[in-house]
Amino acid sequence: MLKTVKAAAPTNTRGKRRLLFLPVTVQLLLAGSLAALVVMDWMGGIYWTPGRPDELGSAKLAGALLCGIVAVVSPRLGDRALPAVAGVFAVASLCFSAAMHLMLTVGSQALGFAEPAALVWLLLLVARRGKPSWAAVAVPLLLLAIVLRPVSIAVRQTTTIMALFLALVAVTALGVGLGMRLLLVDRRRQAAALKLEQRTEFARDLHDFVAHHVTGIVVQAQGARAIADRRPELVPPALERIEQAGSEALTSMRHMVGMLRGADGEVALTPLAGLGEVRSLVEEFAAVGGARARLELEGTFDDLPVEVTTTAHRVVMEALTNVRKHAHGCTEVRVRVDRSADGVTVRVSDDGQPRHVSRSGFGLKGLAERVGLIGGSVQAGPVTAGGWGVEATLPATGTATRKATTAAVASA
Image (cartoon, rainbow, N blue to C red; front, side):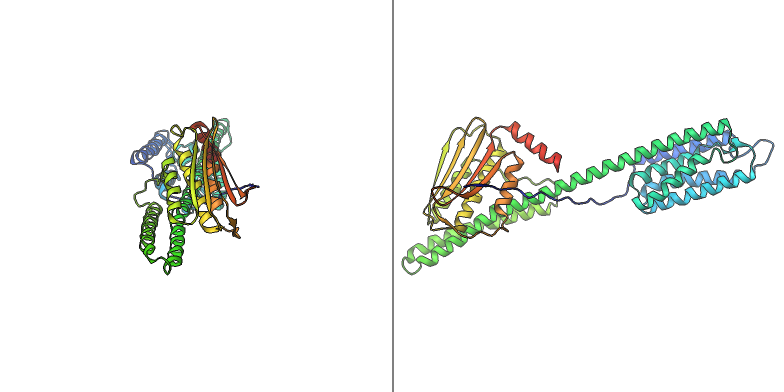
């Protein structure tokens, strides 16, 4: 009775935080906009009053300029430094508003745009990428500093409307920053899931190719030792096959290590295979000696998607490797691939007595993951006629495999 093999669910990892480097044109545009707001406030009399000296005029101008400079360089601050600096400037702005409340009487002198605009920009950046524990303190301080500045001297209709307008702008900036933060978190999660899937794919390839060759080397070495005394003329051909299998294993190892290093940054692709490679697998298995192996093909396979034929190749490779490892007294292995209207069925069975198999192996688990990615299923277990069997059902159309792959990526 064959049992369905379940694939282990992948775990997720976190991406690393990075600084935000704006293009030079954007930095120049930000600096120019803040400078234009300073000039507009100057022309509007925010920093000076005609015919009457303003004690805090120079301080207001210096504060607006300093806040603008910090806003321009803020994208290069770290995740902790950014909310810390923004919180310090917010507290300084609140203190300055309290000083204006005590020293000034004309409410219009608090209606500036340069300093609130710089604080709104800092609010946007803190909400976007500030360290959460630090941002939780800096965000309320920035909101208070932005909203309370217009009404710091007097609460009138004009100052109240200005405060409401700045509150709307600040809340909008906060929403945009939080939305961008959530988007970045989702992108990091997807990138981590993709990296994990690539590492899992590499692990499957390493197991499928290298373990297949190494198992062949072990079996051939055992056979050569068994016939060394009785038929020594058969030892050199066996050694040649061992050497060939070792070279193939070494080539596979170098290929996998090259993909893991990824020095050129390109995406490593799984080696492709078709039904011709499946026939070679069966022939190589029979050439090693021991059990006979035969391949039976039923149907047309020319129009199958490459992911289906590659997966079928891996199913046969894993099943034959397990026969070499675990099938005691096996005399015949049967590989059958059937093509129907809606799917492809791959069956590999032997007539041996299965040995005890450790549950910690990765072969069938990795095979179930690979088959599941294209919408198929795998069953493995003892067969009615005796021996062990592996059966995989794969979709036959590219549409089915693309839908399955899309669903797997969406759920990752």
